[in-house]
Amino acid sequence: MEGSSRSSGKSCVQCLKECSQTNKKQEGLKKIRNLIVSIGTRLSLCLVDIMLLMSQGSDEMIEKFQEFSCKIYALHTKVDWDGCAINERVTSLLGIADRELGKINMKRMQAMGGRLATMEGYNYGTELFECFCIITLDEGLERLLSAVISRMEFVLSIPFSPESLTWMLTRPPILDEMETKISECIRAFIDFVVDAEPVVNEFRNTMQPKINQLWNNFGHLKKNESAKD
Image 1 (tube, rainbow, N blue to C red):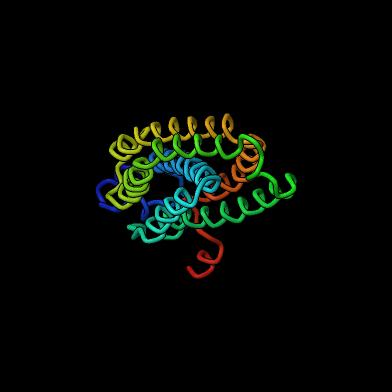
Image 2 (cartoon, rainbow, N blue to C red; image 1 turned 30 degrees about the vertical axis):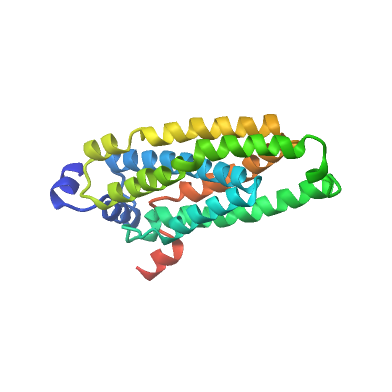
């Protein structure tokens, strides 16, 4: 079965779609799908953490993230099947995260009686946090976009071979690096900014199941699509 996929020259997307339609299981495809889901989940956690960090800072930080978001929305996809749409998952996640952040930040301001920005030490701590984050994340955002999202789409669109695809997808170094940098920024946020830790915990606890749900259906045929076929 795997050999026929190799010799046919079909892309990973085409093979996943056919398996989804026929309910046939291929070990190589399952391995690739699981790798993509793992990387997609890690990528999504990075993106929502960056969104959280950038939303808590100055207008400059917010503008930087908006520029980054615009580039994600404008990214042309190589994937021609919704069941494997990387960019569609990422952009829909940004919309979900934006709404959840709005709720959390509103609740935070109400709890502090609207006095958060005037509290002693708040502005100084926020400035330290912003400086750390801008230096740490500025170059990483562009690299995250090009090196991970584009790489995943490329891998899905080339002829399917379990060995080569596994090799290309296994532990992208940029993602390891970004996870470390984001962890450092989250720690700076908690250390320097008043009432930051509850915000981080609530946002992550809210977004984790949404991210899992978003990626768990990767490579599966949608019900309405199945009905059309």
